Structure formats: C-alpha cells, structure tokens
Amino acid sequence: MKPENEKVVPKKYLLPFILITSLFALWGFANDLTNPMVAAFKTVMEISNAKASLIQFAFYGGYATMAIPAALFVQRFTYKKGILLGLALYATGALLFYPAAKYEQFIFFLLSLYILTFGLAFLETTANPFILSLGSEKTATRRLNLAQAFNPMGSLLGMFVASRIVLVALESDKRNAAGELIFPMLDEGTKAIIRTNDLMIIRNPYVILGIVVIFMFALIALVKIPVTNNADKIHPWQSAKRLFANRNYREGVIAQVFYVAAQIMCWTFVIQYADNLGIDKATAQMYNIVAMGIFLSSRFISTFLMKYINASKLLMYFAIGGLITITGTIFIEGMTGLYCLIATSAFMSLMFPTIYGIALRGVGQDATLGAAGLVMAIVGGALMPPLQGSIIDLGQIGYLPAVNVSFVLPLICFVVIAIYGYRADKLLKEIDLV
Image 1 (tube, rainbow, N blue to C red):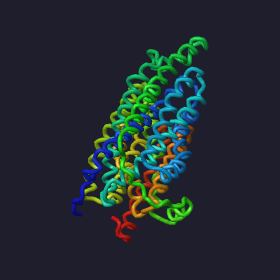
Image 2: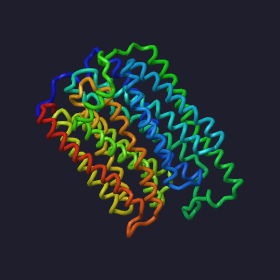
Image 3: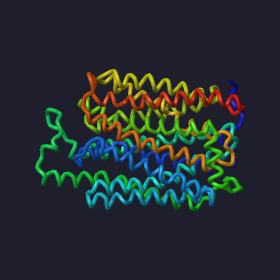
Image 4: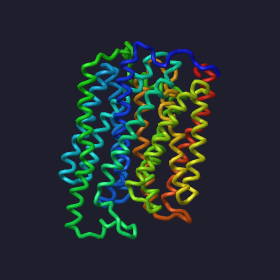
C-alpha cells in the first residue's frame, strides 16, 4: 500500500492541535496515578482486592455516566466550552482529595474520583473528535494516533509519581526481614497513626494536579480555538438510531469496551502479580513504568506503520500479539510470566485510538454522539477489574496462582479485538473506506 501524501495536521490547525494534544498527557497522568492506588488502598484501608478495585469502578464509571451528557453539551455549544467545563470538573474532583483524606473514609475517595472523571469524560468526548476534525478524514486515524501518543507521556509521569513519591513513602507497605507486611501485625492505635500519614501521602499529588488543571483552564480560556463542530444540530435520538444501525460503529464500541478492560486490568494488577513473586509495591510499579515506556515507543512505531498497513489489519495483528503474551502471563510462573505481562503493553499501544478512528469512519454528522459512545465504552475499565480482583482473592486455582489465572479476562478481551479488526477490515474494503 502506498503511503498517503496528505498532511496529517494542516499548518492552519497546528497551534490548536498542539494545545489540545497536551490535554491527552493530562488525563493520562490521572489514569496511571490512580491504577496503583488499588493496591495502596487495599493495604492502608485493610480491604479485599475486590473492594479496593472499586477505585476503578468509580474512576471509569464516571466516564460512563458523563459521556453522553458531554456529547450533547458539545453539540449544543462548542468544543472549547466542552473542554473548559471538563477541566473545571477535573480540578474539582482532584481537589476533593483534601477533605477525603481528612475524614479517612474510602467512600469519599471514590466520590472524588467519580467527579474527577466527569471532567475526563468531557475532555475525551471533546478532544478526540476535535483532533479528528483538524484535517482530512483519510489521515484522521493517524492524526489521532499521533495525539494519543502523548497520552502515555502523562501516564509515565503518573506512574513515576505513584512509584517514587507515593508507594515508596507508604508506611503501611513496609516489610520485615521475612518479606511479610508489618502493618497488619500492629495494634489499632499505631495503625491509625500510619493510616492518617499514608492517606495524606496519597492525597498530595491529586491536590497538586488540581492546581495544574486550573492553570490549563486559564490558558485555554485565553487562546482562540477554531469552531469545527458540524453547523447543523442533529437530533440525538435520530443520531443514536443511525449509529446503532451502523455495524462497524456498533462493533467498534463493543471492541473498545473490551480493550479498555484489558488495559486497566494489565496495568492495575501487575502489582498483585509481582506481589505474588515477593516484590514490593514501589518496585512492582517500576515494572509498570517499563511497560508504559514500551507502550509509548510502540505507539509511535504503529503510527508510522499505518502509512503502509491499513489500520484495521494492523489492529488485528497487534491483538494476536497480545493474545500470545498474555497466554505466557497465565501459564508461565515466575519472572518470565511477569515479563510477558509487561510485553503485552507493546501490543495494546495502538488499540484505543485505532478502534476509535475505525469506528467513526463514515459516520459524518453523527460523529459527536458517536464519539460519546466510544468514550462511554471506557466503562469496560469499571466492570472487569472488580471481577479480576475477586478471582485474585481466591489465592490458588488448581496448580496456578489465582493472580495468574485472573489474566484469562484480558485474554478474552484480545480475542474480541482481533475479531473486530478482521471484520472491520473486510467491511471497510466493501464500502471503500479503508
């Protein structure tokens, strides 16, 4: 296949592209600062893996709640107003970590994250279709992959803060010479003191993040953002019916649900996988940072490959690669299994923006509501992690540790994504949209 000659980002849109692309790093930071908090809250609040996974239920549940309202807001107003409202909600949720830490109630942290992701839902529902609109539809998927490549940069920073500033400082994660956690052995008075200290450590990055988001709000409020929304206002119900009748879009939403579930499970439970090998949380999170570095590198590589291989076919190939590595994660015990889990990130790298771009091919005036459906699909990250946490709590299943067996859930996800890549490739060729 010959490479496309059209510019990925036309010169007239370069400044708004750069500015809005910076937001991709901003929500990437929140995502990957939060993932290891499942393990942190499990220890400091002395709760099960399943209950601690409610962190992900609240975080990604916020996307499901607010994606459609965000799309309707953007359709009525402009992309810029949607972004500003998203930043305001984002900052509010982050700053609510201050009272949550003061009252030391797990439910308050869940509510803070829920509100924070109202803002992220607005940002993703707005920024993704805005990036797609900044140029030709033929280069839209490449353009979104380029913008999304900056998302893992924020994720890497979030992981670094979690590992080197939060997890490493938690008194509740200290171990004795035998490698056992000391915290559960302490008296209640000492536990209370440590819990107060550790919740403040968890709180601080979110409060600082809230201040940074307020700064970004002020910056974007002052900059002129082009109005690229479709001028004709579409009735939401009519738009929804057309989208539901679109097989490529409908299956794309399903694939996105499973992709986000796979990503969140692989990045959240790497700590539990490493813990089963006797590795402490801070060190385990460093393995997650390596995985994110691989993810970032692979995203730039896959964006380049799309000049020569169509997006849906490349998606299928990468899903098959993910199937192979996650199978190793399940059946190979020890460090080799952990390395397979880390390698899985290479194959997840292109999936979110590629599914997003493929699913929106040819939807035309329904793109705003269609984008909301794809952001709403992030609910996959809310539904499956608690199920995986419940499996991990079983301890042992047959001859394998339960944490190994739990990764059969991401394996199922990669099967669904591979099937979508294959079916989308055939369908788009039939309707000449490849």
